[in-house]
Length: 317
Image (cartoon, rainbow, N blue to C red; front, side, top):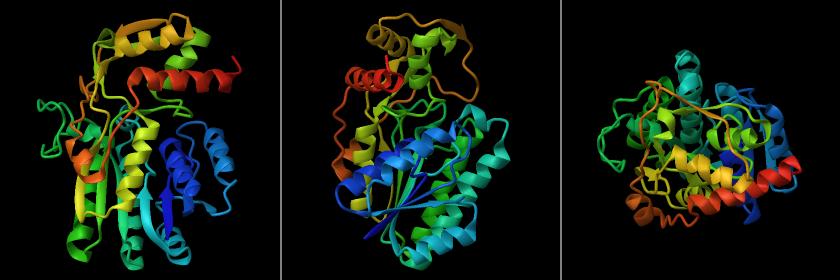
């Protein structure tokens, strides 16, 4: 069976593709190598995936409906891991049209193509950001999640609802996974873990929202990948499932852990938390455990240790 991994040269996508390829699956990677962050990083990920004979790389944009249709039909796609997206909560504040175009219209194109191909499973990457500034802690899937704080989570919540219509009308199995603050080796350079790692070497000033008194539920990349692959392997009709560690820590503790690993202080300054960001992300992962056998096993300190060791090798420290 062939799986299409959209955004397969990105952080999460490349890890998912590599995991599927390593177990012997055939994988088609679709990525447009956009410049939201350095495309060279994605090119490097793609080169590593090309080591597998069962990997086919297609460079293209999910907004190109004819391309998506052609790839799905010609490559015999029966499962989709739709991980491509324009990411970034704060970046979406001033670019709502672009975010809706990529994240909603792109998803529509994939759903249409998958429907015509008789898709056996469609896994949609969503985000914990859909919960917004909820008072329900930990975040649970039964929350209405109808008060997103920026265009990015709004586009993802809309994509979830759109996907449900394809399940309802066409019987397509869809699992929407709400990711929680994924981090790990070869992560995205725009995200806090990478920026903090860099700051230990450059001395760059890092802005901490509310002086670091915000909490995030960091989830190690290997645990996230295991959840995505489990979802691909187990069609459930239509489900929305949180995929997170379930152990939020303060940004202050996060910074101090990296400082201890690097043996260097990070130059931080307190700033007001923007309206686009909630004070906490906190995953109730009971549903993932029950339906997917999800069992996150990497603690934040162990995950940061592994990430630091990768970074030190990457930078030749």
